[in-house]
Length: 386
Ligand SMILES: C[S@@+](CC[C@H](N)C(=O)[O-])C[C@H]1O[C@@H](n2cnc3c(N)ncnc32)[C@H](O)[C@@H]1O
Image (cartoon, rainbow, N blue to C red; front, side, top):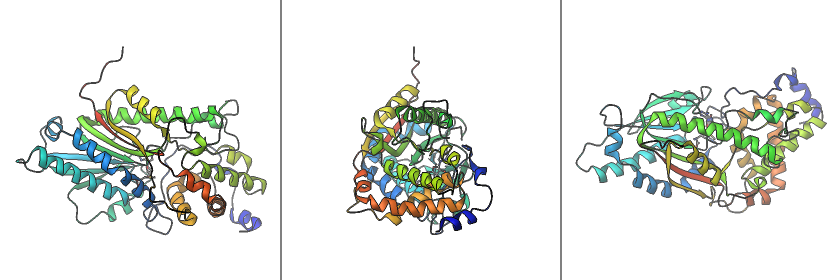
């Protein structure tokens, strides 16, 4: 698109969206070409990679009888939550798989008992497209469903109510970009960049601290809601300890996005201030840091943890238009909250071209160790730290 046409299509004041806004961001709803619903197979395939290890850990950890008796009143219903479920369809497979694993456990641990009933709570932020989610629920399902809108960084349920929590590719979404990133007086001022991948240590630390606060809030909220012996199953982007942050899965892409936006500043399409006040609220927590945060929180025991390759199926070059459609489906809200829609469209158009030029380098980033899986068990008693 010509620069003049783009400027004229931008319509009103491009400066109007310059502050770091902390209201919720959602994936692209509906079932259209760019929707998350139609463009989330990478996340599904990535989560499946650790399924075997996760299943083994769940079977080793869950004691169904004591789980059900840990509820404040007798129950034969196992309650599962998918935190950050989006609008489907990955959540449906994830919940079905988990229920099948728990059914196997029930059959082997309590062969003479009646199979429990299952109730699934689908959680995401209030702006999530819950209509698409509920209208596309599988017709044949062995569970009851309810929606729970709200941030998983806060309480979502009554005390000791939930048995199993699942959270896949959602914990790395920060509640907000760290505030220091837009503070000129701070060493973490992230001028001209939109992420920490190629940034100084102060910027990385600001992101790490924000994740630490958010994750601690998540764990504290779940610790109240999950019955003793209940579990959290996690899969999330990560990074091996000591690997340079520029090598995180999408580090190169974030750098390209920043470059494209900076070029748009030079072309007069957006202002410098718009770029300087924009930072992606995404953090891939390294394994050791993640482990330390769980241990410091103290409410959960780590039953299984490890790193995997999210895309062992990737052969040859990445299909870049397809890849960027997946990225856009998940990230669109982050950009469109800050930049006019035409700018976002142009950014994604240029991104396909730029990433295709470095296709080999991008492909090399998808390696072993950049996805974390974990199974955490709610401790029966929290140890008091002295
Ligand atoms: C990349 S999508 C992953 C969706 C799904 N779990 C999957 O694997 O396909 C991340 C989802 O997490 C949700 N999310 C991010 N932060 C959240 C929060 N604080 N509370 C609830 N949901 C959140 C987003 O709205 C988004 O729908």
